[in-house]
Image (cartoon, rainbow, N blue to C red; front, side):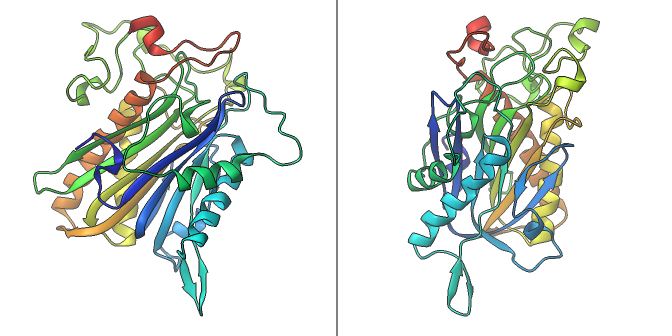
Length: 331
């Protein structure tokens, strides 16, 4: 176990980004099509193929997931991932035609200091292709891929990942792009809201403060006022090797989204676009009630850990006025 999403067999992750642009793409590629669903809680989401993932709709399996910066421009990343998959002969077959199924979601990073003057066409489609081609069972955390330009209310955001195993031996992993309107830390201190779920000092081992003061519980959001706090969204991909139906995958996404509330304060705001994708490779049958409940419980913990790891591993952008990284203040 590498404490990564790719601890689930058959899952690979790749990044593509541009440091001057301060934005990028992360592709989650499945070796075989997987059952998937989605849960949206934020008030300002940006998604691709979201309707397809509704449990009432026909296509049950997907080939990859594209996560991107760039706000709505970044939705083109899915086309790049799709192009790479098409070159591999992957896709949903319709009378001989193969259509790779690539849902995706974006976060807003257009005002982070990077040079977004890209000309006629945004670069995210190309980033998507490069990220898919680079997908591997190991990948970097922090300020990379879709997390390169991410920020939070008080520290640099980033991309994190974590994994765990249930008592019955079912694996679950999460990958999170942390670009939240709120804060992942308690006040401006070294403590992460997700501290109770930390394993092995994976985000500093600082625990929680000895006491909570009113200042720690005060709202910290991007911008001087709520009306200007628009540069947000946390995205997560949860994958398990359990055998799930599409409605069960949807339930897993719903329960796993609880991890956002364990790691971000405040969360699911009108200015956020919080999205969780849940996918199942189907290797291990589970009980649809008790074991699915346990799987969701652990998945929520893993999501919280992935969010904290994303901020913990991040590095500050090299622009005037850029937010500090957590390690700049507390490392």
